[in-house]
Amino acid sequence: TRTCLKKTALKRTRARRQAEQAVQRESERIIREARLAQLTFSDSDLPVASRFDEIRDLLAKHAVIVVAGETGSGKSTLLPQMMLKLGYGARGRIGHTQPRRLAATALTHTLNEQVHSPAGSVAGYQIRFHTSLAPEHLIKVMTDGVLLTEIQHDPWLNAYDVLIIDEAHERSTNIDLLLGYVKRVLEKRNDLKVIVTSATLDHELSRSHCVGAE
Image (cartoon, rainbow, N blue to C red; front, side):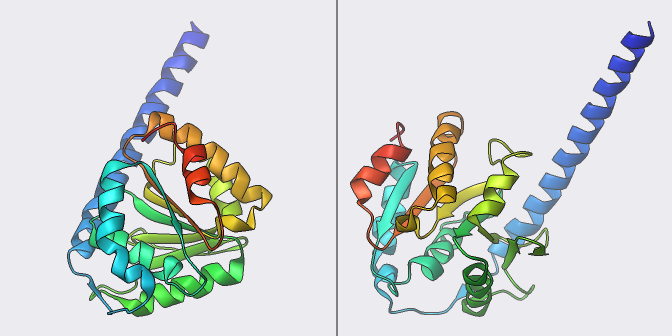
């Protein structure tokens, strides 16, 4: 009898926690959706900016796209902005990984300079030992290791609408692990969009690895 009571209590506690989390997620979604509608963007003449329509059309057809372009072409700064323009970032965040902590913090600063919102910054970051992230942030910039750690408590990456895995040509252990894991996630989540960026990577080989899904 005691065992049954304990199990019942645990189920009720778990159900209550899940309900509270669902309410919190919905509240955050409403806040982010309102912020999304208020954004304005700085003009850019970087090469990636001219490919907006092509990237939009590819994302409509595919779960994964690979964007290959030279360093300085605007991959890191413009792709998350394109995702905001397409309406991503409300239901879940736009997650953007960087191989190094300094790059993550610098990218966050640049995004907040280039995307204008009356409610304040749109991007926050999380790196090892330090987090600057608020519930209303639409973009989360983080190191590859931080995202790998998140998998432990969010195995299907439900916190994200879009994942941008940047600098994939570096082929670090963390990046390889992420690409392998994301392939598994895509088998369950047909709503998740994944963008892999690289300066030199073979884009057809990379996309075929990530997708058994078209």
